[in-house]
Image (cartoon, rainbow over all chains, first blue to last red):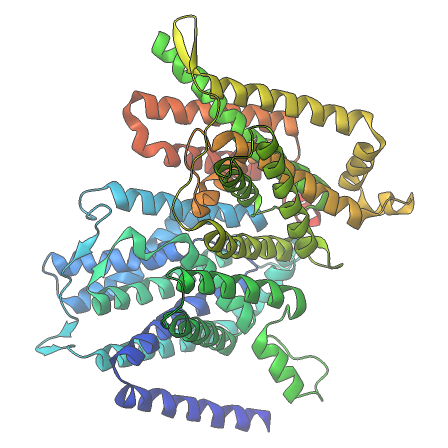
Length: 326
Length: 286
């Protein structure tokens, strides 16, 4: 019964998703695209936090790696499609490289190590010549495949949500497979998982790389959409924002990540509108968004530790004693 | 040679400020097991408070003390959010303190705006063995030394300090002998706020403070604290001084742009080496 209900809900969401770009105006489309990109990264964060039990405060770094990779390739004359494919690959490779030493850490050590990684990366991007320094890279060409050029925002909206669908499908397949069960085991106790024969280190590394891949893909789309990347586009706050979204939606849930990203993006956008009304002080937009991130994060962690989606779905299906994290 | 000595002394001053922030982290982590991400925020709050109070014409001394008390209050409030609710796991508490840090951004921008602010400190400079050093730098070193000495006395010689240590080494046994572990956790947060506040008050005359300076402060403080595995104050002090000297030397000999990378790289190496030495079981049960 719940399964059929879920399928119907999924179809409805898909239909609305496909219809929206045709009816939204450009400013609403911008929100829609950023929401999709944020959801893409958040699915990875949620997978990493909920299944592998690891906190990454540096997910913005992989987003930046994807964006810079695609931008550099496109600016040096490579076809944009190659840039878009290279973005997640570069993010995954750097995650594998960084992950080997970093994933020996856990808990707050890993959180600070990933934060440090992002700070180092931003500082380097701001100083090196080929990344354009603090000014960044400008004039990135539009995304195109062959003769077709993505000139309108709605094309990017479809691209984004197609990417998100792919990311969700991959995540679903990973967590319902044998490695998925292994991941759930190692999130509760790494020692127990290791003694059950699970290659803990390798699995953690793969999930870390997978979450980086998602962030890299989102970064690639982002750079073609905005046509501009700079260190300032990827502040530490952006990584915190993904944590907020993942925690709000419910860790280790695919739909939760999307719902969390949607809830936070829309809330912040709504408050932004409110804050830019005449008569509001000039600092109102940033103050309101900081306050929202903070209050939502604190309240959800303390009072709704499983997040929005599991809380709602638990209420829907009370009969089952315990809802598995799905 | 005198340039070297200048860099060394300035480095020690920078390191002393880092040590104060790191000692706050260590006090809170020892007692509650929580890594307080808002530790840099306390310093920022105190720094901004002093600059405002001095701007209002409140005399030196009074404004600094008031700012440090405000930071201690901020620490107490952070503690209430992070460990006030029983059954919050340390990692959840870390995320809560992260939220507190971001919430503080909102409050700080409303109260002080988003531009960096400075405050006048001790003017002038002294020449020691041919090396010129600002008096404020000497003050930072002196206050940090005094603070560490007082902390050692507090933890070693008073009942309250011993109760805090008891909570740190075994919370269950501490509860059995009638120590209120939750209250001790809040006390630790207030103490952490106090230490962070002292650091902020001392640093503001040296470098302007804005609402987002806390990231640099907390990362440096954490880097120093990992030297002592977040539990040993003396090793933390040594780590902080090493970090301060390394950063100042890097800046002094022309690698100023890579100051942050030096600190962060050092922290990563120390953490990874430590993780390799410690068996996984002790980390999971902790």
